Length: 276
Image 1 (cartoon, rainbow, N blue to C red):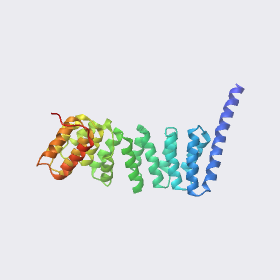
Image 2 (cartoon, rainbow, N blue to C red):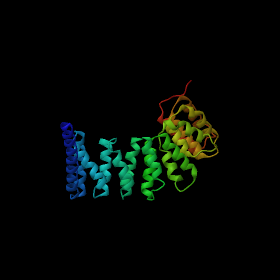
Image 3 (cartoon, one colour):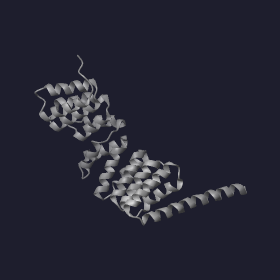
Image 4 (tube, rainbow, N blue to C red):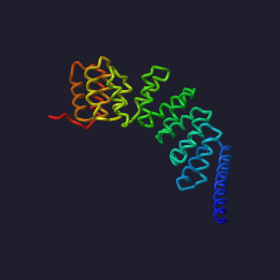
């Protein structure tokens, strides 16, 4: 029993020592010029890769309490590279508490890369409270970066909502690569004249089920921006049926110049040739 108690005490003492050592290293680093602090972070990152627990604790300390926003942001990036899973609580604290929008944006991206349901909901809920435009934009970008169905659902609803965030949500939606959201996006595209951003997201999902709908938009939509977006999305999918539809567009006099240009660019990105 005494031996077990002694082991627990020793483990706790070691943890405290690591934390104190990390805090001391962080304090020493905070007195250096920014360039030296960034170089020190790079050195710590390499030490973490060699298994140095104190170096990891020091980077976390810098991420949460560094004197410079640039250094805190760099520490977040370093943590995301070497300890993304283990540092999730630190990312969450920085995301909610850091006074600098740039740093909060880096933390948002680090959370999004993890892509878990809790992290995505954390980002979604935070947008109802975040007031800084830069931090909001970075959070929307982070949701797109996550590539999850939940993020696609939120971005789609926000883009269609027509509020102050509609444009940035549409821009982020156009960048998302969320194969799991293909059915949701296909349903949205099938509703009348869809937004080009939704068509772009559907193309990124690369689901062959969407090809007939995209061909219909390419050939029959009244809006040139929708036709061009459909041409680009078909190029993203890049199957034989898409190729043939794009080829028809470039050869048809009824295809406007912008759509034909988009079709030619899509064809240039594929390695397919028409079937004879």
